[in-house]
Image 1 (cartoon, rainbow, N blue to C red):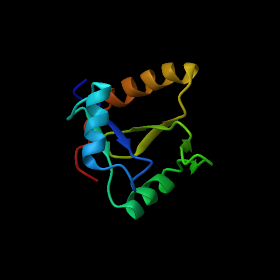
Image 2: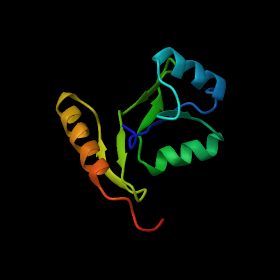
Image 3: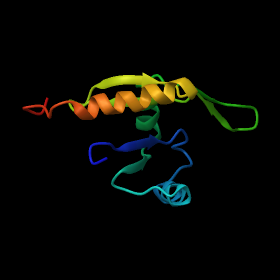
Image 4: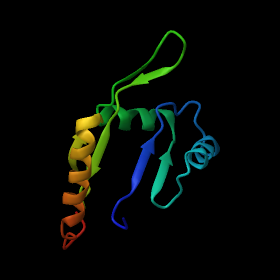
Length: 110
């Protein structure tokens, strides 16, 4: 567990402040340092979401519709696995986390 961290990036940086995300984290029963809910400058957040190819759009009611995307990042900071989570993929995600946690620490920071 000490090697696993969860990061959730807001899909609504225009409206999600740090205090809103802290409230959401508290409501979900998750806390730092293991869990991080991130927001920031709208342009920068949307750039990151575009870069990881997270599909999203606002529907006619203003609700953000999106794909479920889980990225497993290895110890060098690279995407090792990419999942859209469903029943089958839950097992894959657990296995991917085990594999990445079993990796050796890099000898140097890239």
